[in-house]
Length: 482
Image (cartoon, rainbow, N blue to C red):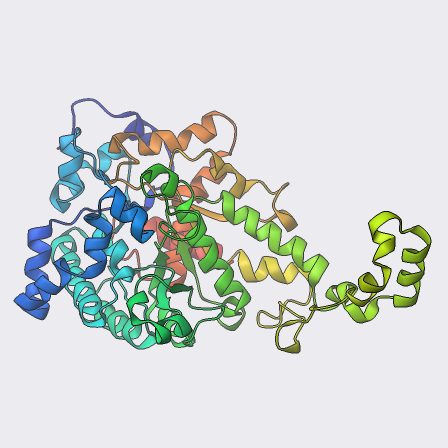
């Protein structure tokens, strides 16, 4: 449904000498149709189990008083634009989206589900796996005819490596889908309280980020991602966890929650050595911006310098000259300190013991020099950035990022959700960083084209085959290998 006059975004696109790839547009599922697919997968009883599951009721139907009583966070409400009827329909109808892509200034779009972003919260394994299978069939059927302009991301359940791998095999080999969405974390019951009181189910939970402290070995999943050429987009967020548990204010819970979830998943993969063991592994951390990514990257570098395997012994209690310390106490202590010299001396190193006798927090990722952090971080993590995020420019600030690094920021529009009141304005908003001299045109090219191709195309050289950007993507991949 093109308009008579070009949108601002379309005018910008017309000036560019490269395509624009949207790495995280959102589709909005039509629930009656999805439930039909779910019935096909699991029967009518599965539909009842899905719509009537306990966590659905807890998220959606509790009153404020009940949320206060149970400690339940307020979850999203009014998340889909409605005043803009055309955009509302576009988020659900692939034929209409296809007709409007040029109007938006977009050449190709990777689309992520909406209801699927919550599937990692489904505790019932049968319901969770059936919901993913049904949604993936829905996506393949409805969006497949428009694969030259868009591709949907399959929902992959991650509660165990086995269920993840089973769905990964199915979506790539049976449905021919080539992008995947995971949650970035799952809730797991904390064993001791649950053993002592079964009624704590859903309350006394821990968060598993598939690396550090995980009860499962997810290495087979990362290996399968590389084998299948299936790039993951982590879309977990952190709403309802920790400090994001307001009972009445959605915005309080929302601001920064995707960054918090992405940060946990990113650090978990890094510190558990995933990027060391799998040099080809890549993952997108979506809808969370890149400001936190720059902060985490710089933070890892600075902390390694102070607490690497050698430097950490500066804090080893055995290194303390106790005789000199006691002498300094005796000479300079006064008041109440002087009254407790003996007790203070005895408590100097009490309780300071590294976990399992290993003082090296970097042992699994095998960092031996600061530059290793750059090599184990930068090529593996991609950051989904919404167009109006002023912090996007930090990805390209080589004066700030250690070792002159450029982080892999990607345009991730979030069209289909409330963040985007007008789909025609996304590219124009992203271009404002160039107009305001915060980034260069080269940076912008990487943002909207080079980095998305690097993520999807390096894992799957055929990712863009048969699409409107096939030739440009192939050229980009060839130049990046030189």
